[in-house]
Image 1 (cartoon, helix red, strand yellow):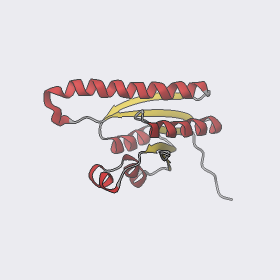
Image 2 (tube, one colour):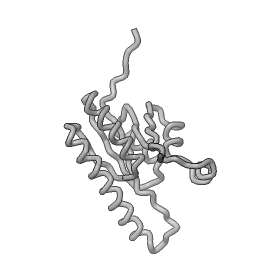
Image 3 (cartoon, helix red, strand yellow):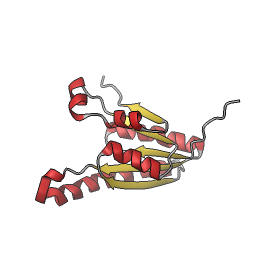
Image 4 (cartoon, one colour):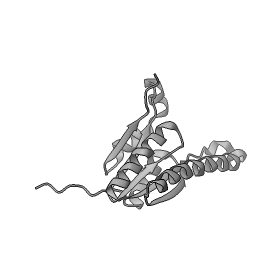
Length: 147
């Protein structure tokens, strides 16, 4: 008989966008149903080329990150889910994988923005990076198509 996985710790990266909030709803649902702990992560992507303006940019990015974390935390608590908020600095893809390893996550649930082919080539995709390099299961929740 095959042993089924036990998801006890779910990592949910968020940036406050509609795509990531949609993923958060799925992460909260799974955490509630599986009685798992939810770690919500925001990554402040720092552009060190900003020089003297770096500290201003960093404060703004961290404020946005905290706002996104607070929103998901509130939703999780409304559904009785155990939740922790995490904010780190760095490049999103590698930072997500690093936190997943540190927190011993069993599953990553993240949103994916709709990008054109050129955007994907030039900018890359965080969800693509995470899914290609993760050593644990990854659930990617796509942004709803605009009607």
